[in-house]
Length: 364
Ligand SMILES: Cc1ncc(COP(=O)(O)O)c(C=O)c1O
Image 1 (cartoon, rainbow, N blue to C red):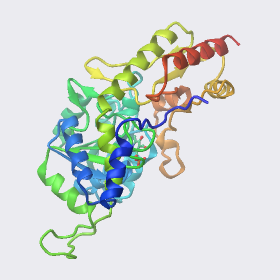
Image 2: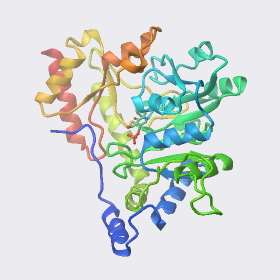
Image 3: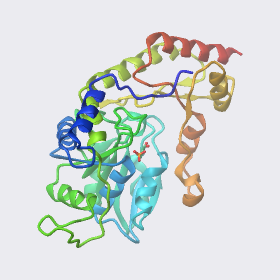
């Protein structure tokens, strides 16, 4: 089976993990954690980066440090992984959904203002599947209404908007290093920011909010959201290869685009002007004139040993977030979208085979 994604651990991952074991530094104190954080901040072009135990805790830490709480509202795109909405709910706040753009599949800035109320405190944008959001328009709205901006960049390490890497454009960026992400630490996350006070607050909250001056003295309810030195050791080895990984993803996307561009009934992923897409997941839409439904395509590809994923369900359709608003673009994309195999281990011959099968089933 050709997987949708898989970790690639053929750098110095094992050497660095062995180093942790041999030196006995396997918990969250250790030099790899700070090394990983420094490398990641440099990569994103931010002043600070702070490692966490996964991407969801990174988002939650961002929310809490921005003072999001009971009764507040946070705007998010309707098409995203559920963790974006959950991080808001954990704070007692309410996610307010906005439809997405039909071309980039990310939050539609022209539909944000109508969802802003007196309770709105922030906008959480999601750089979906590796494509950056339209940040200029979003930042303009945020400034006008004095809202904070959180970038959920869990799927978009290294994506660029007008030459700026994501994670450093809004107030806080949040990343995931789950096994299927652009780089991985098994489980893991990172928050990035240029604001010292936010970094200090997140660092405090990550470690039970324990006073630096007085041990076991806590003035806030904090969390244990720390990353281990073992995870960070893998992270450092992955950072040494991140540029190569992104290059491979972009090259693979180019080949997919070339091979699929003339297939009737397939919409290819767009790369908006001024944006660098990192194709965490190379994704296509199966339109009506393809001949068979999206779900049949997924089943057929599986029969041929090719694993895929359907797009996320619109969050407003999930039982705990159900709302009666109208999100036609998100609904439409969610029914048509497929993530094709996108691992950095994927070879050109495999991509050619996948595209050949897609063409064959469209004629079936
Ligand atoms: C958009 C988005 N946000 C948040 C997360 C949460 O990250 P994690 O699985 O590391 O908690 C993910 C990934 O799984 C994601 O895709």
